Amino acid sequence: MKNVKKTFHYIALLMAMLVTGALTANAEIVRGNVTDDTGEPLIGATVMVVGQSGGTATDIDGNYEINVPDIKKHELKFSYVGMQPQTVKINGRKVVDVVLKTDADLLEEVVVVGYGQQKKASVVGAITQTSGEVLERAAGVHDISAALTGNLPGVVTVQSSGMPGDESAKITIRGASSWNNSDPLVLVDGIEREMSSVDVSSVKSISVLKDASATAVYGVKGANGVILITTKRGQEGRARIDVGFTATMKTVSKLPDKADSYDALLQRNYAVMHELPIMPSSWSYMTPLAIAEKYRNPANLEEAERYPNVNWRDVLFKDHAMSYNGNVSVSGGTKFVKYYAVIDFVSEGDLFKNIDNGRGYDTGFGYNRINARTNLDFSLTPTTTFKVNIAGSSGTKKSTWPNDGNSFDQGNWNNQQVWAGVYNIAPDVFLPIYSDGSFGYYPAFKSQVANSAEQLAMGGAFKTTTTTITTDFVLNQDLKFITPGLSFQGMISSAPMATQPAATWMPSTSRQTGTQ
Image 1 (spheres, rainbow, N blue to C red):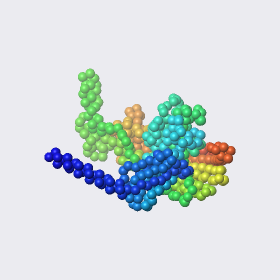
Image 2 (spheres, rainbow, N blue to C red):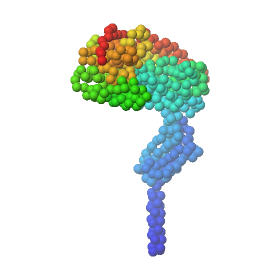
Image 3 (tube, one colour):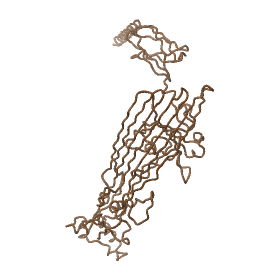
Image 4 (cartoon, rainbow, N blue to C red):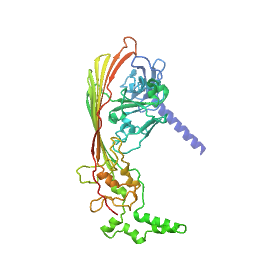
């Protein structure tokens, strides 16, 4: 039995040797030289036969030799670090020379720094960068500060409001360095601008300078970090039109759950019963079960208004709100001028319900904004470039002014009263609106909370429209004829020409009260 097995192994080995020998006999040697696009030989470039395992590498002179099973059918693949890989058909040749081209996207990757651009490999400061494509993945987010959330290490964003038009996040880089203000310096195409003046769709890249070595060029202004926003520019070629549109459904993430009138009254009865041994006077706070039952199952309209059981969350809020964002951009150019133009529209809906006040205008919250930007690059001479950047923004924010008798203070109104119904008003205090059209009300000495439904319906509508226009003019002259790498740049920019917020206020002039 052992001899049979040994004989079988010998036969298998012999067959393998015969097959290998046959393949080797049919294989032919292909030689050649591999160089870069300047004619320099590439040492250690990889050469492989497509579809075959193994391969070889070029020597110190860029030469190689490789066995090819069939030089009429097979292809050779050449690759080298920093070079674009290339696949070449042999077509029966025994000598194949190849020139590999530099992979510019890999070797020339740059990072925007305080004094221009620098190759990524040579950056020594704490700088992190992201692209506009990454920011656009945050669907439904039109504000750059909110889109940065979670995309850059060391950058912390905190969003304290979800009101339409007030969704900008506070940005802190590597923690707060001051009790007063830790906001970073924001530069748009090298000019200090508001981050909200740029749409996510028009961003090419964002660099964040985080430590002293990276922000030193900005002095004390960069003490809290610097955010450099670079907008998109046109490229030479045919006109390219891009259209984008997103629709986002928004809903509240979490609201407090409160007991209804019936359950709350029963809980108070239990508490009173535990207090009776030490405070007999608490008996006056007991609610008979027959009365408590009327809050849950009123027999008629009169009982429903006498014993209210209000879910203020359902009264004040919709199930969802819609937000829309659309943009259209055109880019292209010739050898003389390159252009990029974009127009962006944002419309944010309101989670609060629209309660009819019978006065011919809608109340609540909302925000509409339209932004436009044009970037032009003129090649005046082979070494002279003139850039023109024009940007404009017009936004209208709508809110409610609480009817609390206080003086009108533009830009500093208090909308917190509208939220009182969700957090503070008990479900059995009063109805939002009674059958006669009057709003529920309780004397101030018994209830310190106003009717939130009345605040929404009768508090008036306050609209603020802000328009901003900015312009930049940049002249860049290449002085390489003096010394390589030398250039001159002159820049003129206008301060944001913003109109004073135009306010429209439609207040309530009278009060209707209901009784309980």
